Length: 458
Image (tube, rainbow, N blue to C red; front, top):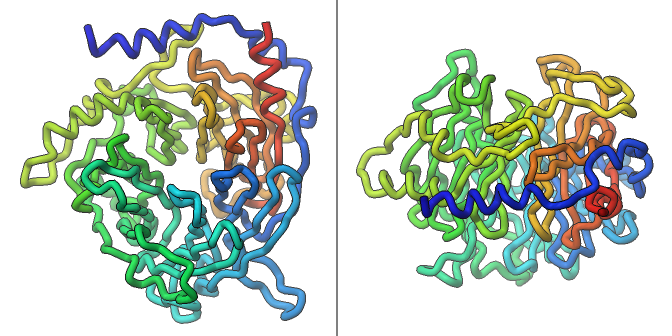
């Protein structure tokens, strides 16, 4: 019974007073759009700095340098308060026949540095040809001060490990290598702006990931690690295997895989699900997942997950935990229609240009973020494709961003996004939602403080 107390307390809060989505029915996305601005080609990832002054946007195919009349790999820096471009960072090029530029961004725990991941290396790549790299930016000067190799292919998501009691000064990054099925471990404890661009010494090792759930039709990669997060104590990492749908557990002190949780069974959720992205609440109690395959989001109890990890952490083998474990971990949403393990996000708003007021089963929810102040609202960016084959996506199809009240599972409001909205961020003060259209090369700034105010008014 003791274990249920936090869960029941959370459920009880769902009956507080609020105005409800009906009070927002007279509004459209344009009523909350502050501004939109041009970015480089294919903005893929973004992150606000700790001060909330600047936004860093990683761009997969860069910009045209007018002085050279050629395309260069870039990341854009925006003034968050003015919603204007203040600087374009030119980074080392990737391969001309692959991902030319950058994919994701993260900020160091102390806020001093921004890390921008280049996905691939190759014969035509610049700086560390044998894989991806991190361009390190001094957030005070906004200059690139270091290049750190990942030695992986498809380097995308970057995650900072929480400080751990056993090693209170150690700052570790994990980088998910989507194509090479491994994780690069980067130690930035003594990272300095010292005039030396070579950051090779900061690469500690690579963690080779293993799975029991291979897809024989996939030839290039088996696991496709995507989302990464850590347990609150920093001792374990959760690696989301997009291709298999399994959850890989890594010992984040010794940097080795120790377990794998089997994929969620179709019968558990009522539909096939994979795992795409993950965010954890500030108190470390809940982790939210997006399920691109399945058009849904869910959440799990992190304390219960740590209990399951503790059962196998000391074994010499790498055990595979059964799919039934998910039933222990899920924290259902207390919706007006009853408890639901997953929230299906296939509804589109009336002002959507392609699917007005309709359902669409190729929503493909991808990036997720929580509001940074209370962690009450979950923002979900759905790419929305026109074909199952991503290579045939019509760029005229717009995506959406759902705002979900996690206390009751209701969709507060759905914003019309750009073409294939992927990069997603909320300003540290919780006032502004920023979304980037991967296919229309624009960044959109929305006033979410206005939406929440209307929703929560008495």
